[in-house]
Length: 538
Figure 1 (cartoon, one colour):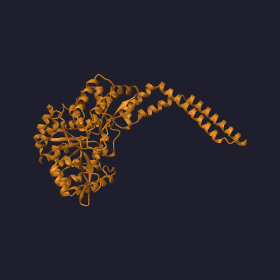
Figure 2 (tube, one colour):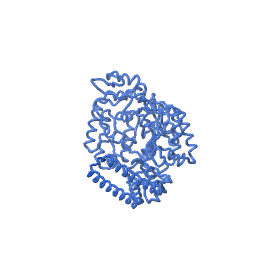
Figure 3 (cartoon, one colour):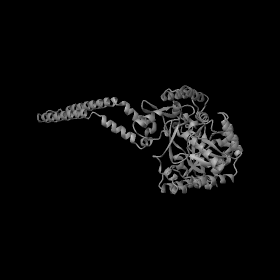
Figure 4 (tube, one colour):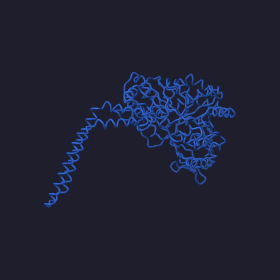
């Protein structure tokens, strides 16, 4: 593997400003992202008490089903004795979801290693699996490249219910067919047979979306001690009882503060990422595996669809007696995380950065401190085929991001067109249309009423000329198909659908091309979290 770092050409204003030392955005966060912040945050954590022993037992019991490897066990023992945690998280997508899921995990691991060395204290990596997410349509598919096109490949089973990923059962035949179809699109390499066998075995052992996600992540990061925890795991929900109570008791104030902070964020020139309302309880009620967002109205927490209407006292009793019926949303999840885990820093993407920018007063209300926000790594994987094409077409990855590959493709197509043939056809069409005009005038003088028939004939001939032009263009393009495919491959591989590949493709596409040590080798590269975009040639 070869690493190159470039300035990221595609960033939101929020991300750009967050990396800036003097930008106003920092007033929305507790810490800037720098060395002193990590020292200060570590001191803060060491002066607070966390239920680390209990938390460790919960994580260990969750992971035992998937396998607790040597380094994972080491990190669990360190957590039990008070280690700080770097946390990142994601929904449980099929085949781990888009590449940025493993980019987050890699970021978490690298940042934990870095801070362990700098602080000379145990710092462990943890991945929070958002198994409570109920938008199955967002996680039930992936994308591949087939016949020079981006191809959406979906899991065929559908449910009418909006059940959580952790309670949505997988159909064994459907998930097997999904995996085989995706790997067929990848194409055969020396690694395909072994890799697909591993993935199919994991699919067979998985009951739910979250099971499948967890076993794959645990397998990919088995040598790096990544701790995994599903937000819906029943013992963890019980562990959160007291924290749900705090969220309920301060519910109205938290909602009002998020609304106000979001307005300030918009006034500062940024978007309103949440669309918060003062009546939103920012908690879900779970019923038969489905999540229903609670609204605070007329002294009650309610949801008409779920036929739920509870007083604050009743909701507090639920938090105590059966916390598994409660679930966090985008506002309360970071607050719950801060209460439950000794978080040194949270690793997130651009969307999460925007959400977190609305939350500082909510943390203060609960007498909490917002942890350091660490923007995750941005990575682009460059295969050998893509490297060769870049060299042949004298382009760089940065230039592809900037649209130069698309410009060169359009320029090439324009240059190879048979302009003379197109002009000859155009002149023939003009001459014929002129003759139609002359005929039309003659027939009108003779008082013949055939205007509609004339227009129909003109339209027919015009279609035929355009069809002839199109067929000539098609044959010209076919003659130069090899070059055109090269440009299309660059766009499909590096910037599919006008977006970074990490938002489209899953990691197994690249493991299939590189080998089973793909993730291990990525973690050996000298990367650190920064505003730089990491270009990795495999």
